[in-house]
Amino acid sequence: MHRLEGLPTASAVELLAVGGGTRVAREPSAAREVVRLCGRLPLAVALASAQLALRPHRPVSALAESLSRGRGAVEALRVDGEAVMRTALDMAYGVLPDGSRALYRRMGLLPADRHDFSFLTSLADDAEGPGAEEPGVEEPGVEEPVVVDRAEAADIAVNALVEANLLEETGPGTYRFHDLVQPHARRLGEEEGLAHPGRRERTLRRFVDWCLATAASAEGILTPSHRLAGHDLSASAADATPLDGPEAALTWLDTYRNVLMGAVRLSARLGWHDSCWRLTDLMWPLFLRLRPSQMWIEAHALGLEAARRSGARQGEGRMLTSGAIGLRNAGRYREAADWYRQALEMATADGDVRQQAQAVSGLGHVALLAHRLDEARGHFEHALRLRESIGYRRGAALTRRRLGETALAAGDLATAAEQLRRAGTELDALGEAYEATRVLALLGHVLDRHGDPDGGERRLREALARFRTGASRSEHWEARCLEWLGQAAETRGDREESVRHYEAARALLRRLSPEDAQRLDERLRQP
Image (cartoon, rainbow, N blue to C red; front, top):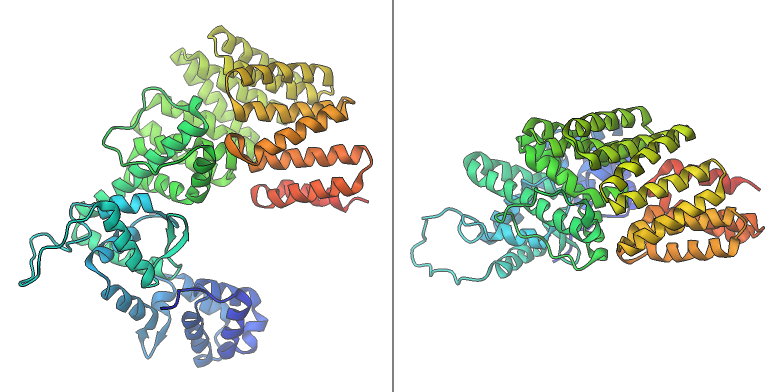
């Protein structure tokens, strides 16, 4: 049995050129798109090559467009009118055990590019699921099946799918469909859903509940202070995937970020409004640590609409303030300020002082980024008074951090260092490891600029080590520390070390923030 693996892109393009000839060289982008749509599988690419050979005047781009429509390469790649890829997948599916076929169909319904074994276990435990295609149907002469626990049932079903090359194991307890298999599983799942709509809804509800439960677990580990009081999940929610500490929680969020976003979109589409905004809110540590800008904005736009439709004022306020941060980080300052003002109006009407402070602080940060420093300082001082009036120590410390950043922007390095030291001391006392490490990094940068390079670089290196592992892990802040260390090395004339730090920061930012990576490109080009 051979694994369902793709060719290297260059090799797949060469195979496409066997039938496509010089057209492939003339349209390299279209050729790469064709092999991508074929999943770089030799059989699929060979069939695409044959189609080009049969139609010598057809542009490669036309084939790419054809493969991208409808059900894609599974249906479009035909020999003598037969959809060869679909036939091959139908044959592989047809010889599977009942439990594996049922699991395959239900997985096909999910808007997921990754599948967690813990969740597959709950699907295998479906009362009408794997083990009996339809209740009440018995085959004469067949003994009753041996009862196994749900983890064992899931393991048997999953192993059969892996052995049939329909499912690929990508990590411990993590699986994915090949790009060409996903549409086939979706078609079968949709066909079953039409015949059994209740079963389809139960599968999708379990999926969303599992996303909610595991996201809530990750939030509790990484950002416990963010938990929204009065909105705990019901006891009937799906079992969460076990997460063993901060590293595991952040890794899970990173691995399943697209799955979570798929669940947010699904909830919005099906009118599950509470699930939509709650899941967006529970994904906060994902947005905070991993900074997927477009996902952040889209999720909160959907969550805001859902909170409004469900009449959840707390949810609406959270979507406005958290969503505004995503808009702010994307440089959409005017929209961010509008969201913050809406949140402030709501919080003032409701007498919610903590939420008022959050909105005022957000307006301050927008002003700071626009370099309106007096306005920013006024907002932060207002937010500090509000937070201190209700004894919100964590919020007050975070506001002092913002006042430190404002002083830094104004060139008042002594005031910046004082505010950051006070913020760091308070956050350390509260056990806020991640926020305290952010302040430590900022303080290191300020001290380096203030003429204390030894103290500054020592703090930056300490913060860098924390951001690389454990409870404070953050690639975004790792990149910031590396850039600041590069600046420190450049100031003391060590060009070689500064280049090394800048290059390491740029490697991280190319994935996280292309604009910031471009800025480092320009810095590295300087003599």
